[in-house]
Image 1 (cartoon, one colour):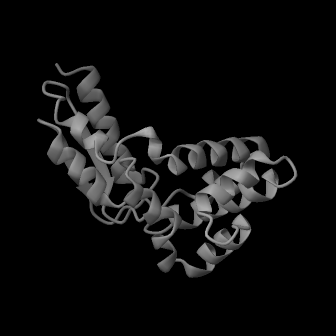
Image 2: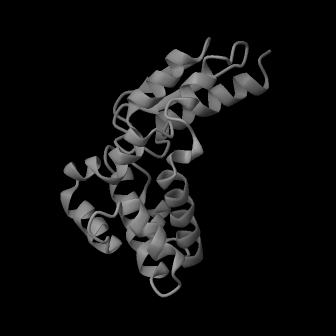
Length: 179
């Protein structure tokens, strides 16, 4: 989860590369960014060009797979880089479009909106080892949302591993059938 804030997308696109430098270097090199160009803008440009779209989408998805796997991410069967090429291109274009425009939200809009969610049930479940979407984002959202419950799942990463998936199912069952 991201909040749409620039710091969250900068974390994924730039800073997280410190944890997986080889994968990040491949990702950054594949952007073919012009001097001073943001990686998100370079990817958006390459993904919009039919001549470079395939390679750019594959590089984007391979980087997503690399960071989502840190801390116990999704199994290889769910790898984005192995997905159908049209899906990869659409996925990468959608993500870069929103992220390069800060999700079309003022910086703390999601947290500000959550403060007004009185009476709306929320159960947030997040792995403590989710490097792709650090737990502090979900933590801040839970603290801003009146009545929200937060479950931080020790030792789990991105992609709803076993315990996280159980908690999400239980929360969904509770919200849809609170009796």
